[in-house]
Amino acid sequence: MSWNKQIALQYLRSHAESQSHHRCAEYTRKAIEAGGVKLSRTHDAKDYGRSLLSAGFSEVPPGSTLIAGDIAIIQPYTGGNPGGHMTMFDGAVWISDFTQRSMYPGPGYRKTHPLYKIYRMQ
Image 1 (cartoon, helix red, strand yellow):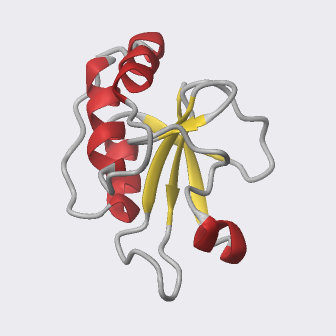
Image 2 (cartoon, one colour):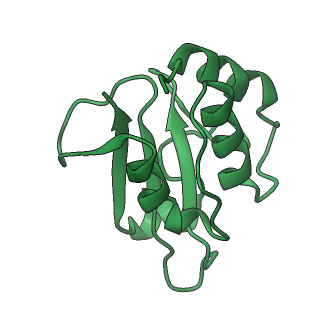
């Protein structure tokens, strides 16, 4: 099954809320699926890496230049949301259930910089 990242990004942009509703994985997953790729569901955003790999995405080496359609799976940090975070890069900004100001969705993430991996459909 091929993935149309432009449709996925259009879906994500048009559904983004003005602020987080703590539904990052749901919104990002639905955008990916709108582009034509079905993902196995997981309970937490932090666990979507395996699902992305199974669907044909590849892990991007650290330090690589980001491109539109890249997906970040961010692990939780102490004191933060234990589910972690999932977001997609549109070529200019990161979007999940809202348009973020950086890949890290909030001040706790921006302060602690928890581990993350980037995934890309080749």
